[in-house]
Amino acid sequence: MAAAAQVIRRAQLYVPGSSMRFLEKSRSFAALDSVAYDLEDSVTPSKKPEGRRNILEILNRDRVPGIREQAVRINSVGSGFALDDLTEILKGKHLDCLVVPKVDAASDLHFVTDVLRQKLPERHAAGSSNPVKIVALVESARSVMDLSAICAASPYLSGLTFAAEDFALDLSLTRTPSLHEFMYARSAIVTAARAFNLPSTLDLVSTTFRGEEGVKQLREESENGKRFGFNGKQCIHPDQVATVQEVFSPSPQEAEWAVRIVIADAKADKQGRGAWTLDGKMIDVPVVGKAKAIVARSEVCGMDVEALQERFKDEEPQ
Image (cartoon, rainbow, N blue to C red):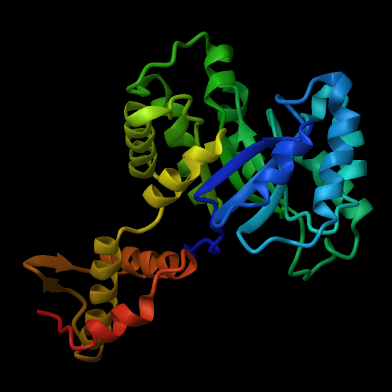
C-alpha cells in the first residue's frame, strides 16, 4: 500500500470561537501544527453567530509563521447549525481544514463535501492541489461500526479523531487512566485510517495537564496513543502543545536509527541483499519501510536529516 501523504497534525489545539481574546492569543504560537477554531462544544447556541464572525475575521488576516494549519470545528451536520457555519466560514481566505464532529455515517461527509464543492468550486475541482481538508470525529458506537463507509465518503477526508468523552457517554463507559475501555474503538480508528490511506489520526483529549503530575500523565497518555498507532492528539490548553508535539515527533534516537537503516539499505540493495543485519538485528523490507517513513516524518517535523545523513554516510549493512 502507498504511504499516506505527509500531513503533520501532532497536536490540534481547540480554541473557542466566541472568545476574541483566545483567538488573538492563539496566533502567538511559535510552533503549532494545527489550530482548530471551535464553533461546537465551547460556543453556546446564542454565541454561535458571534463565533462565526470572530473566526472569519481571524481567517482573513495574514497567516502567522508559527501555525501550519488553520482549521475550524463546525457543528455537527445533525445540529441545525452546520450549514450556517459553512456558509460563513468558507468565506475565510486562509481556511485549511474543517473538523466535523459526530460523524455517525457517510452521509454527514457527503453533505460537507457537497457544500465545499458548491461554495468553493475552484478549490475542489478535479486535480486541485489545495482543497479544504476534512477531519472526522468518531464519537459513537455507530460511527465505529461504520468506519469503512465514513473513510470512503469524501476525497477531502484527511484524518480521523477519537472523541472519547462522547463515545463513553454513548456506551455508558467510565474512563479510567489505563484507557483499556477504549481499546477496541482506538484500534478500529487507526486501522481504518491506515486501510484507507488517511494521513492523520488524532487521539483523545487529555483532561489532566497542570503541574508536574499533570504533565507526566499527559506524556504517558500521549506515548500510549503513539504506541497504539495514533500520530497526533487533541489539545484543549496551550500548555499541552509542546509535550504532545514532542512525543509525536520522532525522537533523535529514532531518527538516527532510521537514517542508518536507509543508508545501509541502499548499499545492501546494490549488493543484491534482501535481508541483512544492523547492531545484531535482522533488517528486511518491512523494517526498511518503517525507517523510510520515520525519515520522511523527521524532515516534515523540521529535524536536520541532512546532517544525520552526512554523519552516517559510511554506514554499511552487516
